[in-house]
Image (cartoon, rainbow, N blue to C red; front, side, top):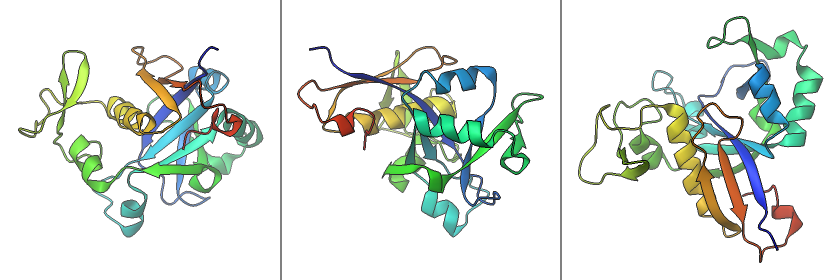
Length: 205
């Protein structure tokens, strides 16, 4: 019996704390990102923290992981893509927009503790304990690296942190981060063949 594989997209974002629908993430409405909605089985969002916004809400959300299944995100976008209150200009892609998705619409699946978020450098501390060793990312216990040799890209760090999370799940056999940074899928999860519970097929919690 062939192992079940699950394709997922990964996003690390500082939440839009004061959106019209409460704390929220945003999803790009570019052609490539809309295409990936129909390719990936789920999208996972990791809430990061902007050090310039050190509020209780920011601290409470930091490190929390949320899942939006393919059907859920597809239906949400189709229903709200023309709602001007839920659109904001994409500062990364000129002439494009991002759709606001309330965190309350997603399923919280776990949390990375504050210490690991800090060490990863993902919240903008400027330092990281995670460094490149050949093609692999490893944790350097001997020193904290500053910029040089550290994981520079937020997206890369998010993928690695989420990979560690998936690998700790009992139903998961293998987790692979794909090399194509701009491809539609960020991670492929291979499930254990012995675990045939249907609710776990797209429910990695």
